[in-house]
Image 1 (tube, protein in one colour):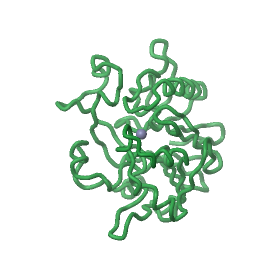
Image 2: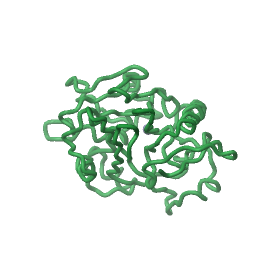
Image 3: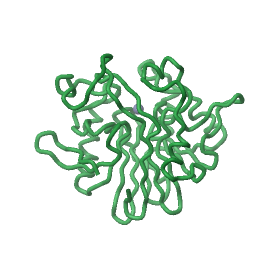
Image 4: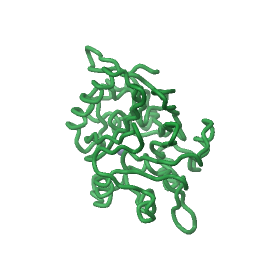
Length: 278
Ligand SMILES: [Zn+2]
């Protein structure tokens, strides 16, 4: 897909399963169950979605999936194969040389968004993209280190601290232009400092929603993940950003939709917005 002069490529290194109730928060299963099937453990199928934005000057990887640091029990619980997905292979399968990635951006530091930043070796975690500069939010990184009981399970320091220590990861505050036209934009709700990523070229915009809108089924502003720390803010941020996406006909990518790689947002009288596969 393209957005102006930018080429946008969807990379899905793996799918997994997660509790449907956790994905739809206070929405009763009688409603979400009409849209998505669940297995006998109440798990729905979701995915790790990453996107590569090629600007002509830079090859920017948005998110790095779960990587190689989940233990066998977690992988089984998530219905994932015992062997970790290889993000570099998944990128190569889309015709992009993983060595060409020169910027990696993490929308936030939950393990399912930055686990592939590094690869474990006997001598410790090393960068999976050796040529790249990594970018993440400083207040999110600080929050990760507070180890709050509510969300500490979402963080694994091996995914980012070796990069921070070696000076490869730039920690930024608030909205930040990663490369000309490509922005991290703070969209709190899922947690305090999560960012969406926008890439704008020649009047066209691609937007990676991250966990603000994890799947197309979360396009209704009130359908919010149970994980979200600040659900009211999620609703407000979704209403604001989705309105802009609809008005400006943005091309959009969801963090965890297993089927829809790209979509556009339209207004809907009943639900506020609807996603239309692009
Ligand atoms: Zn998250």
